[in-house]
Length: 309
Length: 57
Image (cartoon, rainbow over all chains, first blue to last red; front, side, top):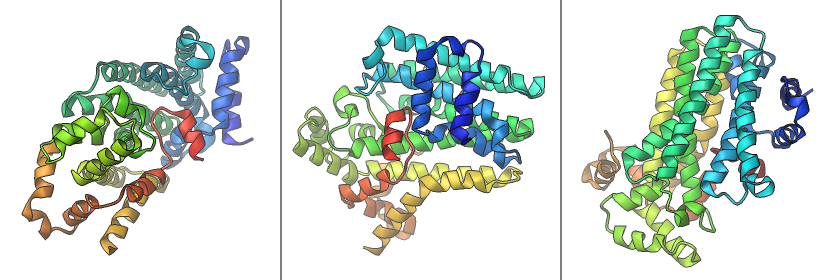
């Protein structure tokens, strides 16, 4: 049985799930995509000397939280791919609540010592609460740099922090090591959000961020920093649905330093994470190092290609 | 705090010429959109999107 089948099997065994076919069907469908996010606890578990089997309940908890956040986030963003288009917003909201509770159940009934279980439950619940706050803040809109980073630190990074935190706890890692991995995971989450923003800003046709008014990191940079093309960029943003205007606006993002800023922010976090991992006594730290290298490797390739031109 | 505005001024200053990393960040401002997209599409992680993650695989 592969790891995703084990996750589905554990999820199906959560009390009450057998009564709810829609919840199980959605879980199975998303599991079939094999989301990498769900494996984060297993990697942390291995890093502290455990085996992926020990982290199954943590992976189920993270999978449930992941689905719950996506269900709600798609509605808040009016994402055309959202499940709510298929089943309706009331049902999607209700499913999101079910997944939140199921995730907590997955940890509440796992076979680990009570104190560790409570710590893992608290981490999971804190993450849900903070992420919900982040979604609320994101809906209010990001007008400046401080509010952008606040949204990232509430909406995006706690999920990754808790995923590593509870994986480490279930793998037998000490409370201190698990907290260090929580911090590392948060930085990783910030890196993924920065990367996601750069990808969305450069995508064609125009990503919904251009039209909706949501400011991703590069767009925010080009809007608030005093640079020669700022006024032109502000005008172009309103017409980003036009391919020519979008191409001109994206060229400004590169020229004004918005992409350089994103790359610099990624590299700074990567260096912090490397130091954190280096200072954390892990049995198999290379598992987590590989996770970070996956994000930083394409940047190194890009920079070395530029170096040769 | 290294704010966006401070970063922009730092990147635009003559001092960047003395540092190889800073020079690369300056060179990045002359990159093409395709070069940037090639980089971003090489990372298979996405925030809050199961479909995007699935399509990338």
